[in-house]
Figure (cartoon, rainbow over the protein chains, first blue to last red):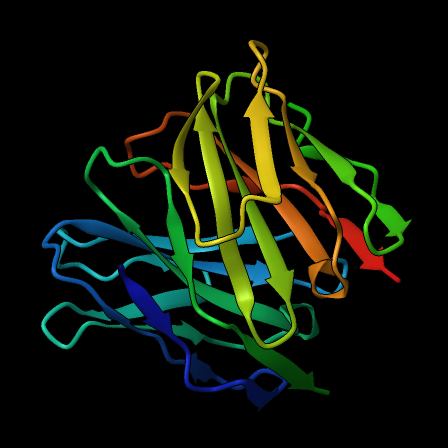
Length: 116
Length: 114
């Protein structure tokens, strides 16, 4: 089974600064999808950004971008110009691209604190 | 479009009882997955349903079961509750299974077992 590791249980960042959250994964597959999800204190999980493994270009969504290193099996999330509303738990997730069902594998999460 | 809804939002049960949680996916979504979330463990995959069929199952005991109805609504059942079953149970739906479409999550059901 695939595993997803987030080695930073907690991170903090000053408002307006940049922070990078780490994620590594283990898989023998060549085609897959990677996601970052955000879970604010209200608990509704929302998608932040998604990356297809066959695409070499790193995905970006406004202030959020990823550094996808396929060979290293690394998928970090960079948040630029951090805002108070970015404070949340962030989960990295993996999904196979094959037709094997819609099973996602999640890391244990990184709790991000934004300091005013 | 309405988002994923889960009922009830909070539940308190006693050890040995059983519980049924409900999830209504986003309209048009046919894949529904269930997760158990506990502090330190992250999200643990329970099972996924597509077109009323269970397609994947996580590493949970048989006390955890689920089903999906023809309208894609899903229920999960936990029998003979244990203290360790206390968790946030999240439901997620996707537009089409077997693709890279992201999952949309509901607010969760907070289950407390005493």
